Image 1: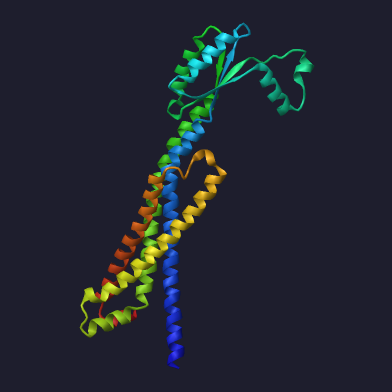
Image 2 (image 1 turned 90 degrees about the vertical axis):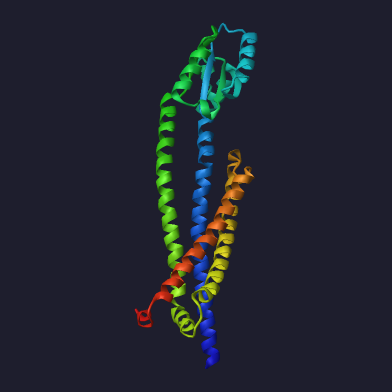
Length: 292
């Protein structure tokens, strides 16, 4: 009979440990994901900004030597990420593939112009700086037009400000929820042992002596939960890095180490604090109050 009861108690204890560890792991995974998004948000924003294309079209009278010299000077400009020359024949071929028909044969002539596809560094993708760059580029007599999507630039910068604002609010809310959920999980596990705590206190054990094994045990669970969360984050980031290699998500080792270290330390601290206050609560209760 006692053996069956011991097995039941052991299964109950393991189940309690498992639920606490899983709760901590899931919440730390969520926090780690949020931290990863916040840290890499600027990189994502820069990626979209640097994908904005500025088309520089040359007049029909522009000489090849002038265009080559212009492209070289453009490549050396502080705002340039890349500058690729596109001849009107290459542009026509690209358009024919997109349209699925030979419009040059239909028109009898190629109406397109020689051009350069310019991509700017993220810091220069603002309405004001793009306007200044366009004026500078139009200063060359053989440049016919400088075109880019003005509404897209405005929308991109406005959305960045809005997303950053809401992300900060979401971070605070999620952090608060994480603390409350981890605290709740640990308090429930301590609640199941409230009579053991009170019994130990009644036989003369000090509060510090009673708290110590609970704190150490839950710190271990917090560490295990943090390790599980870190493993999950690593797997997710590896998947994203393979799918979007241009973002270079795994290249910044110090940032990754900071996020993983922060998750591990947070798991330990919140487990320690939650256990301390949960055990302290039952240590301060009268025996009669344990039943409510």
